[in-house]
Image (cartoon, rainbow, N blue to C red; front, side, top):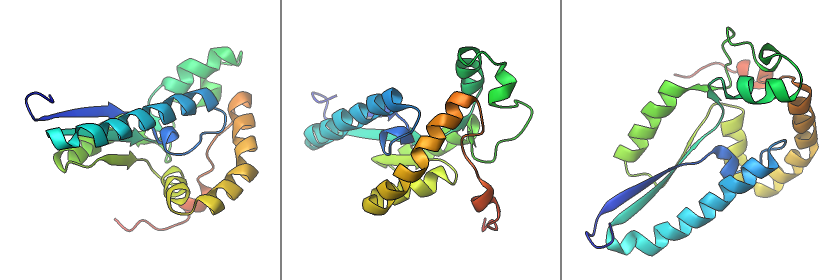
Length: 166
């Protein structure tokens, strides 16, 4: 790509690479490392016409949690998340793919694809890190405990009361 003077590198990362993800320290650590490497690479290859794009989805509506955590907890997958129930806090895989294509077409360096409250916290950690860290220390431990107990991880009651403006 450098020799040709053009090219694009697309990295599918996670919002967990932008903000911490209580209950998923090793996952978040690996995503932060990706961000450090590819953000630096972006600076190094930009003058050669190579672009680096970071796509950071938040929770995506897939059977991942159902498959990964159910057996570990000794509970059936339905305890983690009822596959028949629509989760308003997760983006569908189709919507995530669509927004990824839009971001790449617009040559965005980094895009966060998520719903509230995760998107809200991502912006908060980015623009108000002191406040976000203060809040994160107060709710992070409960989130980690909820994951281990197989309980609902994200409470969307605050955001579900807001009216949609679409």
